[in-house]
Length: 85
Image 1: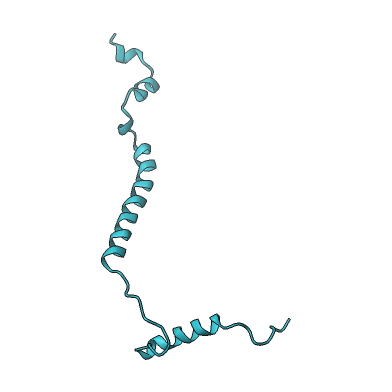
Image 2: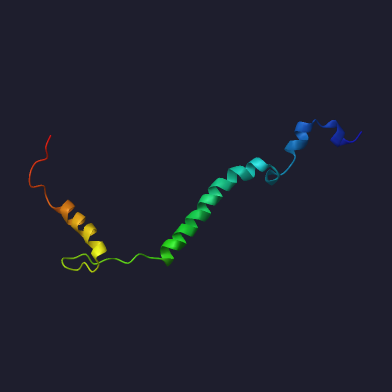
């Protein structure tokens, strides 16, 4: 009889290297996918930087920017009357 015939099947499974088990790749795949996605997102953010808008008084250039500037100015003003309770 050879040695492989004497071993139970459980011991034969444990002799495989770690990369031969599919569960290892399932566990590693999640964090690796997140790291790759974060590098991709960072590269997009670096390549396509949003321009900074000058929103100082009278510097609104497009009508589409006006509501955002009005909301910003409204939220920055102190309340004139106490809120109803």
